[in-house]
Image (cartoon, rainbow, N blue to C red; front, side):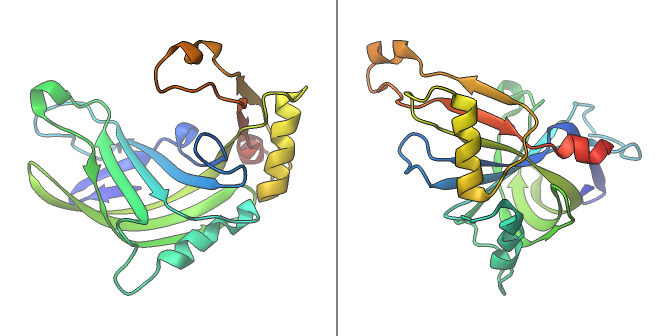
Length: 222
């Protein structure tokens, strides 16, 4: 549940997850970029906005320079953020936005969040309990919020070299080597776009873009 003042929002679990990108453009093969991508809709008891506009909130957290040897160590992110003044706003980059806002007419944009304490606990399987607070400012003034939800580790993106025979198998091997992820539930491969050669300042990628899903849905249904 996400609460902002008297308002309350429920997590859209199907699309909310932790995600990590390993390697890729302008990064070394073993570099990691983690992200929490949490989606929310007004709860059943919420009265909605006064202007009647629809809401679909997206909260993203991009912890910079965070890296683990085993994906289960993701909980260390919470430990590292628990300082006297809370999470560092630069190294713990956080945004919140309403994806259904009429930006042109309302001027509603993505808001940078001043993060507070972030607590993360591994619940077993692929699930982590997240407890987070913060504040941001919009046209109505400063808004504080609290979040308490269980979110899965859902995806990893890897970049095997362009000359591999099986991009998915190579991607799985990278995930196993870098973060000890050995179970998967589907994949999607985006090959290099050869047309990029014709575009200025867009060099040809020399790797495949492979997205691997963790089997968190099977664990939930099982």
